[in-house]
Image 1 (cartoon, helix red, strand yellow):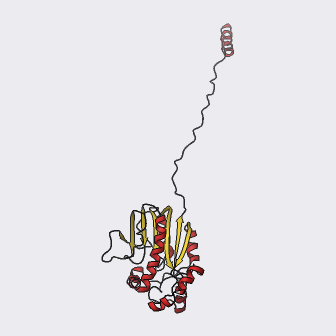
Image 2 (cartoon, one colour):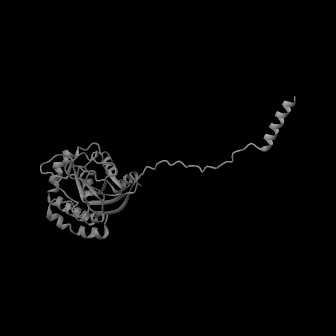
Image 3 (tube, one colour):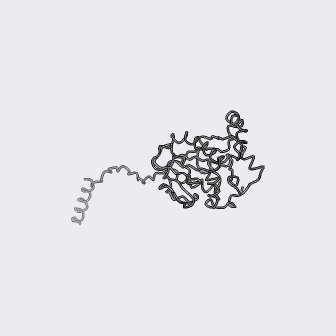
Length: 265
């Protein structure tokens, strides 16, 4: 799969914002937000970073983390104070400085998804948690995209990365997958009437096709142990008091005899 041919995210941002403003986009976003809201209250820490495709989307309202930041690809009017304009493949955060990272379709529309994931793992502290939300290729949406072919229109120009590939990347970055959920089983019809006619898929999906929703959420934990430098401690050997040799009386007598012998001579 080639990712480098994709245009930069800041070029696709207007189309993505327009799609999330559509009816089907809002429905999908509501399903994603509801699922994330059930998981975030269990993740604690001091700093949270959300990396996504639309600066207007806020997914961290239910998080108990105090300091929250949103990484956006480009400047825009009305940005909140906690927004940081940066490239998701080169995050302006220190290593091991963030407790929770949310990737909201950031991998789907990145030129280098693996690099974005690597950066997210870099800024995560040991024991921190990563939430990845992306389109599911093993769903009706993935089937529709495969049947129609990759189109330049959002969201069908996304990567739709499979769970198997993400699991391989997690293993390389020493991330342990804790949970995987999939939601929104309706067909990707823009017409609301057609979507309602296919509501049977929503009921069947929750019962028999739990991993075939339009999007997949993966929760992972960074299990790398924190490296604490240990000062070199030299073992101080126990000193043994050796006895000091003293001149013996025999030696003194022999010396006295030698002197007497010289005088006699």
